[in-house]
Length: 330
Image (cartoon, rainbow, N blue to C red; front, side, top):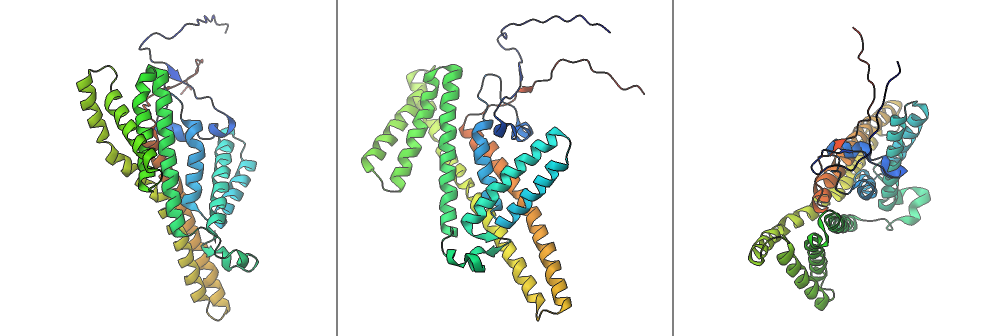
């Protein structure tokens, strides 16, 4: 039937519950389902999707960290995307392709393929000793965490400045200076610069934690805000899971290979049968558990550590287009 439609275009009223529709580039759009698992941003705050997407991809790769597993994941996602006829499913498979590429890159950097050392395989024996070791991966995980935490603080500064004015972002600038200064102090680099940065950061935090309060209240709130530095160290240590998960999956893969080789024995037919069976079952279980962990733990780092340091509020209402919906008849 013909319907009369009235269209009104107006600015939102203060306090009005405005629905949220995310608009991002092709790569960031792949992560919209992950965003919706937690919470949409409020209409007045920044959408963090394009900023956490590269980190999430890198985190997944480091957590799974095996060239062989990444290749399997990529091939499976590619075949599934070609077979699927639904757009949202193809989008999910494209996301998995990106995650699997990061996994293969991490496997190349660590020299791990199906739990085996890539440097011990004939054509790649010349690369032995060139891959990242456990100590280097541990340091890499901490540095990545530090970079993401600082980046989150930069986004918090921009977000608060846009929402409330620049003076409300000064405290976040203080935290950035403090973290950089403490990092330089830890590595005994540029002692004068580190002292200046720490001092400037403390002053900004103490004086601008609440720009609307009086000077004494500001100082008290700043001291309380500084108490959160212990949580900041906890956030940084949380990134060790990137190292631990990648290491555990490679060790389990190595154990599966050793058990399979021990069962193979002299190469008889039963030996070969159990050799292949153990490889398939063992690596299948390890692949499944490691893939699940590589998805869950980067989500945790994103929604807890990164969102917190970026000052994410969340709670946005998803946009639902106005439409005529027909109820199915019983």
